[in-house]
Length: 223
Image (spheres, helix red, strand yellow):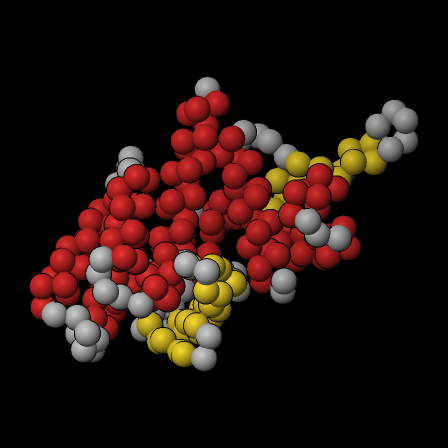
């Protein structure tokens, strides 16, 4: 895992803590265990984020002489995480290996391109992490016309399903069951390569609203 991904994970973890408790902070050793990182690697990246005012660090001395180092997300860090385009530009999301129907594939997502490798076959999809959700879906739809195996009815239905996906991901109350239905349709019924659908559902503009909906659901359940 490179430093960019570590910084992204730190900010995501601290932002999730902020959403649960706006005044909350976490001890650095606890954060290192949570992210499964060596303390030296965490501290190096905490220093970088603190130097740019994305996080705030403080130390507390106890009467027993022990020093605790706490960290929490700062205002600029909150603004960054809540702006997906800027967040993804500064700290791109790394997607390495996922598994679809028993086949391993690698998703390489860059600044303005995304490539999916499935075995020895390469399927290119024309969007990257910096594309917004509407941009990614439009480019995805544009690429359907190049698929000789799809007829006009399949393309039309797929376009309608992608519009429903965008509506769900931008609504205040996301229906996770409907998201799953749309994904299943694209995987099983649309006639698209599974890698294309997997790349779309690995895109930050799709992943992040779903993660927020899951956090909201867990929070409501806990209360």
